[in-house]
Image (cartoon, rainbow, N blue to C red; front, side, top):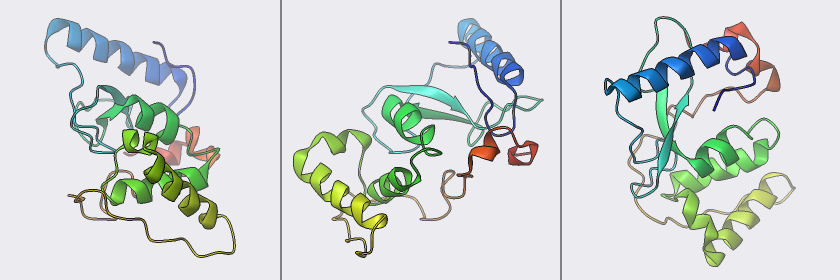
Length: 162
């Protein structure tokens, strides 16, 4: 999979170069394939794939530059945050209540989540989401807590982590 778009101020060319280096390291055994848990929803039983936040040289092969994310968190939540900020904020609240991405397939959890998300964009204050399981991270210090939400960050060099 060759990447096509700008991200965090890195060009498609820079992103492709790191992706090729990643594939080479995995093939040689110098870097293992992505392993869980998901670095966003914390699900320990889901298949994960690598996601880069930093494509700068020299390449960094550890967190928070290189993360392991489940497909839902990676492709349906993180990368779609620019076009759906309310959905992103609701998803983060779901994560912080101990929710996994796959929990949103459970009708009762999805219903509560949808009410929360609707209230985020309306005049009604958001409800408090019920805790699903303990959340093991300090809220506000997670790698995703302060990532940029503006579409300009995709190509803005100031969005680079270093």
